[in-house]
Length: 183
Image (cartoon, rainbow, N blue to C red; front, side):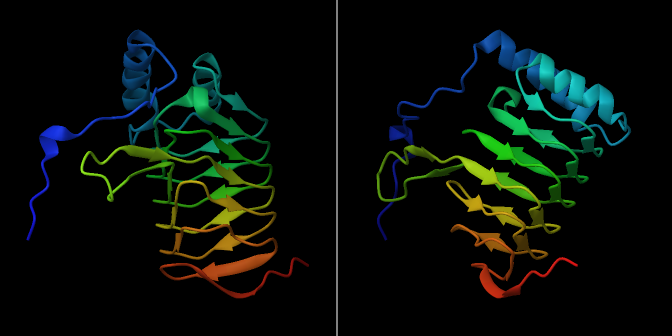
């Protein structure tokens, strides 16, 4: 078996989109107000996200123990619910439409590494959740995925490709199992 030389790792041309001071201030804010299991004031969290450059709509609920990597790469629409222990690892832009639900423990992961390169260069991709999308508990949405209007990703599923509108997906990798009919 060939060994990989991790000392050759290079981050490539990636930029976090903000200077070190802003990133450090966000890190402290994220730990104190977002990742903290006691913090429940969504209005304060939305205010803090806006200060750090996020675009946040009205009536957004952010539950305790949520981890957000970079708020300056985050757009959240109106009437959005982000559940406990969710992780928005937005190394690239994340756009969450109106009336979306990101359930407990769900992960939006914008980055991966190129395993075909000895340097494991970082690869990032934008994630878009269109209006009415529901990401089930403990599910994962991968880099470059668009969940089209009113798509559902069932509990503990992995979306590595775009989800069709008004469709329910389940599994790893997520496969379409039925149409979503809203009454």
